[in-house]
Length: 323
Image (cartoon, rainbow, N blue to C red):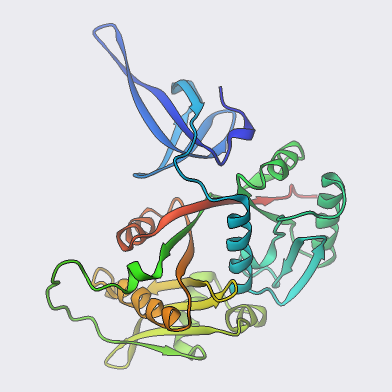
């Protein structure tokens, strides 16, 4: 049966789906194990997230992946993502990053445990909790999988909970900038403009999505040297936005805060924003794009799959138990 050490690895699950004429019926699922509890296992499959009750699992085992990024590749992408979403208050535990932005977003208010914390793991996690307690916030740790599986096991033993799994997805920029394989019909998509700084209505959309916009948030949004704010307007009204950054020694275009106002959805506006940012990133010398999306956001996952994004790795945001 599966163990916590299998989280982050590719597995195959044979589940019981019913009984017909006295015979048990089975169904197989293949995907990455992103969560394992006493009652359920959660997989990231090509068709989306799959949550299977343990009582329905007939057999489950780890399978060797056909291709998996190396630990060094996961670290490099996590550090590029950290550059792209820069918390204004930062600390270090050896190689680990500590980040604080007055509680605005989990990414900017969590520890990133990549590399050596320069002390035993239990002592490192004690130090993480003290650092966040001094700032009046809950201790959060982002655990890239399977790289940070040992950290996750220690957090499990301490009773830390998990937020929903997040997919870190990537695509070569040439895929986003290439012309369509077939001629597309004319659409009513207005042009996308890229600004050096966010307009007030751009910030209003971001605030609505993230539940406010404190001063620390503005530092996160604008603190990367190479950044663009995409705007798609129609008759002067802002319909869709997105943010692009170039980090990771110039290799990675980071796409974030992609949003279309509700009444303008299903017109291809988000795709236009991503492609405009991709063109800018390619012009800056980037070769690949990345983004982060909750696995449960099936609509966004489907949109990104259509653009060619695939999952590079996953992470969990772990939350310390209340004092």
